[in-house]
Length: 165
Image (tube, rainbow, N blue to C red; front, side, top):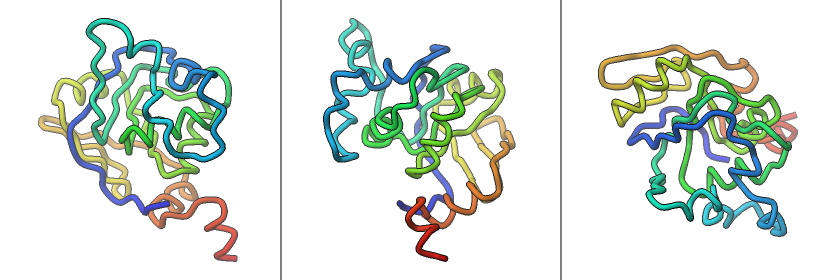
C-alpha cells in the first residue's frame, strides 16, 4: 500500500445517492481471486447507458450513502483499480468506508454543499495530514480516525501494521 499525503487533480462527479456495492461492482465479476483488474467492470450496467461518462480521475465526488449494500471488498478494489485515489461524499456505508481505508483508497465525508462545490470546481487537492480538501474557491476540513490516518500516511495495511509489532 502506498502512503498518502496529498491527492491532487481533476474530479469526476457521480451525481447519485445510495450507490450500492452491487452497482459499483456487479456480482458476476466477483470470481477473480486477485485484487487487480476490477476497474474495467466498474459501474458495468450504468456504463452501457447512453451518455455515461465517468473519467478515471484521482478524485471521485459522489452522493450520500455511497457504498451501501453488501460488504464486498471488490467495490473498493474496482474503484482504486479504475484510478480513483479519494472519494468525497456526504456519507458512506460503514463497512465500505473501512474496506476503502484498508487498501489505501481515501473516503472523505463532507457536506452535500461542499461536494457540489468541489464537483463544480472540477479539481481539488486532498491534504490528509492537514485533513483538508481544497478547491478553487473553497476549503473544507474533514474528520478521520487517528489510527486510520496514521496507517494511510504511512502506507500500512493490516499486514503492515502487524509487521511493525
